[in-house]
Image (cartoon, rainbow, N blue to C red; front, side, top):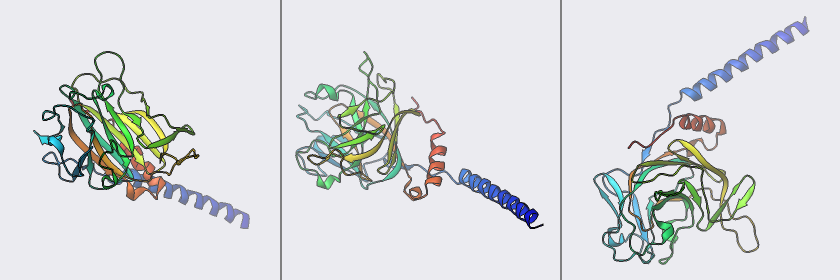
Length: 285
């Protein structure tokens, strides 16, 4: 009789556990999806601060960054020569766990004197240093760059690549020190709109997406190591900025989903990410 009750009780416990799992799984699926927050409001540069090489933080030299017709624009119509005046426009606060997206296009001609590699080139800088810590003549913030490239009409030129000013990362268990690594995205020629997203999970994982397709992933973003070391300090969070590298660029949307509140609950975090990435978001033309 004791054996019978023990087996029966175990059966009840198994059923209860299964029901609890199903209820929790259903609750996670039915939780309201986190909302996109617009970092660019479509009206002005509220919340953003420029840092242009050779100029003080906050000096928007020659009106490089501006808002016109609902677009956040990078422009060089007031420049005679580029003169390596690389610019960055920083958002007002750092982030750690998040999904960021930008919809962009390249327009017009490159500024006179701009380097060849900067043709149709921009970027979303993530896990970056604070803009207040940049030197006046510093060209790029120490950061991980989600590189935005446009095609030149001949040959392949993927976008959503990863570049590493002052940083490095791991991929497939190996430390990657080369400055830029191409993604597997297709080439986008002309002035078409492209949507690039980056899923950033603290110091563990970064995944790039282009028009809804995963194009590259890597792990352990970190600062460049000190002399004699192979690995640097892991980057858990940092600034977000967009670039001005000599080619006119339009941004019509820069938005983010802050995932910080899920960071300590891996199960919930994974459920939220799965739900978000089950949707294929493509830039409309």
